[in-house]
Image 1 (cartoon, helix red, strand yellow):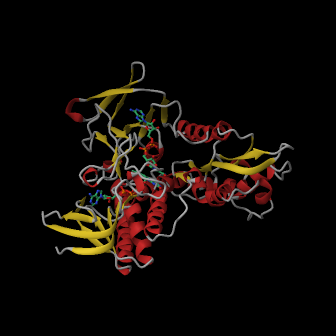
Image 2 (cartoon, rainbow, N blue to C red):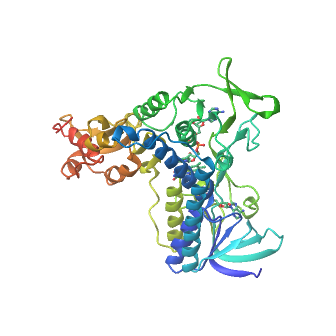
Image 3 (spheres, helix red, strand yellow):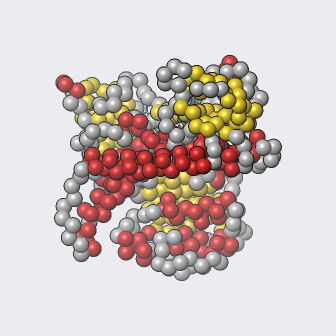
Length: 469
Ligand code: FAD
Ligand code: NAD
């Protein structure tokens, strides 16, 4: 491999790294990306994309199971797990080919190997065969992402105990599983596996699943899980597990003397930043108290000429925040004096069944922040399109600043649980982040019959007048 010089060298080709590379190249910069595995990162290979693909298989299974209610005789559905995994891989492969092609078109140099920050403005690349190459750059971006956290007593072996990294390639779905952690990953996996026939038990340490969501939204998901046979234990400590003879399963101990006997344990207790082996400290990049790369509000690290983006910094661990951070640091590198990102309004989407989507303050966080609030809740049960779909579980809740006459003023937060809410969040996200008032939004026309009408109706009620609800 030959040494080369670039304007920007990015270490890590996940959403943060490839967004910086594509955006930088589109602004005329000469960019190189160093990736030790495959471009696309966690998101494309063992994260967002495969998780949503498997959830879609679960959605198809649910739909076929109730086809008779539409007058369609589809028989009893059965599952071919290897075909499910094959389709998932096809989606990943197509997206990876697309990403590689667009990186090529933008003339981004993609180097296969492990990147290590060496002397100032230098990245060493070590290829799998041990050969090395030195890259020099005016600006370096660390985008090394994150890895699953694990817990003591649950050694990950890829069969009995798995994390999200292994779950996407298990050879068969277990008959029963314990999911440790009721966050985004835990709930998406519990929903998918539960719908495809696994008896799932979720074990969550906090009092509620989906911490950070509005309490009514979390309750809606929990109720739906219960109805579908997914057992949820909250406020429990997991003590350990005792494998059965021949490792055919294991018994997980939790809470006050409780046990659950399962074929598989899925550990979904958060992700930690990947900072080891990058030579960060040697070049003066500092970590914060939680082990993330410490950055200012433009992604600058303590080392001049080195920025960091994505899961390796302490911001919402989401692909779309990584994209936004990648673009922000390129604008900073270009000297454009960009506005820092406002993480408060980040859109969150969880693709369990029912789906969850929200942006801005929950009712509680708005009160805690000192707002006098008024809320409005409307349910999908009253929505025509949801009735047609046969998916009437869930609600839209809007939190607004209370005006002197009791009506809603500025929209502070929107929280949804229900059918396709991840696709309905767009206008709610704009309302929150554009600081629209209830009156602004209520004056807009919503298409009928759509599920997105429910957001319009929920906001309309905040004006003191309403149509259906
Ligand atoms: P990563 O995607 O982790 O990429 C980092 C890259 O850097 C990797 O390719 C790695 O191989 C490479 N690398 C690391 N060190 C080096 C080195 N020294 N040299 C060279 N290369 C290196 N987010 C959403 O927004 N929506 C979702 O629906 C969603 N679902 C998820 C589902 C699951 C199961 C998981 C695990 C995550 C999900 N996420 C989701 C989170 C999302 O995947 C991450 O926030 C996102 O991938 C972070 O991007 P990143 O570029 O910071 O890091
Ligand atoms: P998380 O932080 O969302 O949830 C982890 C959960 O595990 C928490 O509720 C925590 O209280 C619980 N927990 C921790 N230790 C525990 C223990 N010992 N016993 C029982 N419970 C324990 O993390 P995650 O679900 O692993 O997801 C990681 C990140 O990936 C998320 O923060 C999210 O940003 C991202 N992600 C996003 C999506 C999405 O946007 N749809 C989907 C999956 C993952």
